[in-house]
Image 1 (cartoon, rainbow, N blue to C red):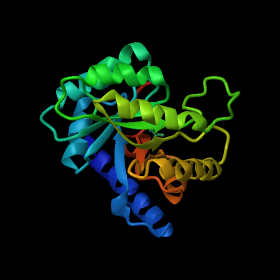
Image 2: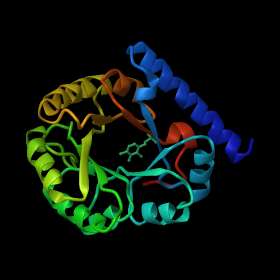
Image 3: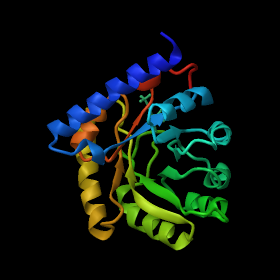
Image 4: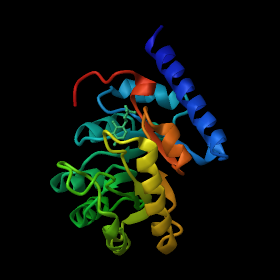
Length: 232
Ligand SMILES: *Cc1c(COP(=O)(O)O)cnc(C)c1O
């Protein structure tokens, strides 16, 4: 099989999984956006995905993300930045990402907003919520108690538009349990911010559990594109 056939088969399988999970949860599959995660794969794969009807792609590192985005400006794709973001790179990311899913601290808000200055549309922002226990080393994501303050900072920035929440299930915990916690956090968040109703959760191994817990966006890489070419 050639690369296009491989990708088409992976994509078809993932779309069926999304449809089945939506149906099991009594949801409309059209409510769920597939973000194809293309990190470590070449721009030629992004091009194949776009040709197969993918509308949203996810990248987790700068400058790889920006380079690939620049190679694909002729494609009508929404670029999601989904990775841990260093504040000294956030302004650059604000210059090209359409959606930044990994905003978990105040410092990033100001830098992203600076980078987005002069763009024709505001950058969509998701606040990344930490689902790890607070004492876990290398934990990423905001404390749920800090979400309201972060949301207010996004509103005040000017070139950023708050869309909702994002999370990654912690390693070593049943994703259904973690995503049930996320659904509760989200319910609380939506009371104050009913319009910010995107929920990005679920990857290749746990997208069913995420859809069951209300995900509107799933971020899927290896189940579509195969094993990543190099170790992160
Ligand atoms: C890499 C990555 C994904 C995709 O992971 P797969 O297991 O390949 O589907 C999703 N979300 C984030 C934040 C990632 O970094």
